[in-house]
Image 1 (cartoon, rainbow, N blue to C red):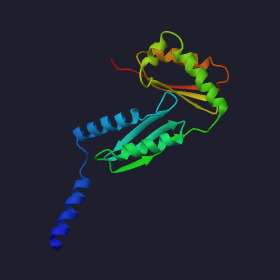
Image 2: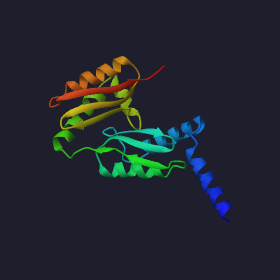
Image 3: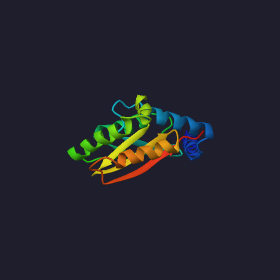
Image 4: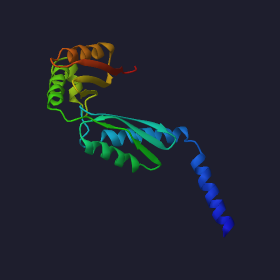
Length: 172
């Protein structure tokens, strides 16, 4: 009996010490991304990202609603194989001025060609994060021209103090 318990304990410890296989890692990446993108209130004014360390997931980003932070943690914890979730998502402060800026920057970026084509997706790929009048652009665009145009349009919005352009260009 005692030997069986020790063997079970040793097998459990070995299983936990095993690194994630490449296939298992790809599955986790796919599932975590899918669960985050499918959150019902995840939108263009939120930015969610994550890091994997073995079977542990660290959630990162900024959201406008506290419930979105807790929902993200809940859905990632429910993924088979995830052992621990470290939720470092920042909830942006409530600010009527930031809300006005979000809408104005949204209209400036998505309101005219050629960037208006990005607005047709379920979750537009250019995320607009506004905190205390400072704007950060996150996401992916098709080319360098679109990245620069989004930056110029966001900088042209009255009331914006600074724009940080973290947009990535899609690899061909």
